[in-house]
Length: 117
Figure: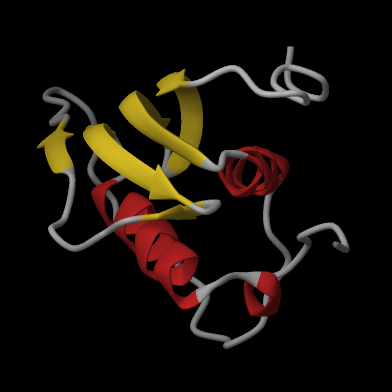
């Protein structure tokens, strides 16, 4: 499988999830199931939005193009998810619209941790 690098390389579910992260900016996503390397988004996982006070809340310029290069944290996140046969994201922390930290429950397999420590 070739490396993910652009929006075009994402599954429809990944595009939907990326759009949600971009919209929410600061949040935690909890109890998101992974089946055969793809997030299950129906029903939508529990999402807890973070709201900052005392800061400017400017709308960031979002790309309206159908094609754009992905940032490294997004690539690493979706490549990790794709490597999981069966699991559950217990908690994914999103900062500035990007995946920042994740806790995942998964069964050990022959390649578990090989690329992701």
